[in-house]
Image (cartoon, rainbow, N blue to C red; front, side, top):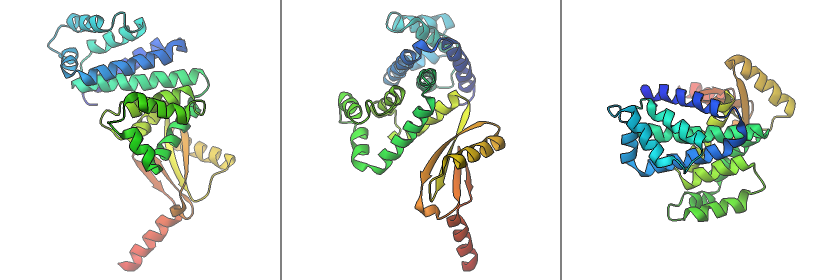
Amino acid sequence: MRGPSRASMAAAREQLMAALADPSGAAALGDELFAVAHLLDQEPGLRRALTDATSPVAAREGLVSQLLDGRVAAGTLDLMAGMVRNRWAAGRDLADAAEQLGVLATAAAAESEGQLDDLEDELFRFGRIVGTAPELRSALSDPKLPADGKRGLLDTLLAGKVTPAALRLITQAAVYPRGRSLDATLDEYARLAAAWRQRLIAVVRVADGLDEDQRLRLAAALSHTYDREIHLNVLIDPEVVGGMSIQIGDEFLDGSMASRLAQLRQRLAS
């Protein structure tokens, strides 16, 4: 998001945090925000009307009330009314914001159950499973497969094996991709879940696994460096050879033996 949308998203997040002071309704709020995002995706004219800065604020609020009153909880209605009071650079930004707030509300529901760590791990692991299982990826990404078919497939694969929040977000990502690949959406949802607790995700690639003490020491070192809590997602990658590589957002820290060997070959060839 850019310009006024970024400021409006920050304000919406603050409003969401106030709404989630009592987290008992967080899961339902997340589901309703996803439904609003889907509605906005389907109706470009509605997006334009709700983000038209030349339209009176009262008119935009009235349109939200007309659409949602009696169909969603009062907290969801208040949140959306607050969002349309603010300025958005583009209509799609409002739909994106509703989706992001839906993920954050779902993360808050997981946190209230002590399952936020599990949620982040499950999103990451399922994204990697999809990346290495072409038939599953094809089925979940097939626009011809009805939404109920995708929900049924995911229930069969995951119900009772992952947290309710993870199943909810994975299903959302598969049924409503919004123009993204499934694994890209899962990565984004994992990032947002981590952001709910204001921490970063580090993807660590090693030739062999890390034991618990190594994980704790690495997380502590990275947390000290970035001045933020760090959640580690560890991947076993034989191509690393030795050492490790770490990706945090757009930053890549490569201390692997494979990288050193590649650098040596480049020097020898020059």
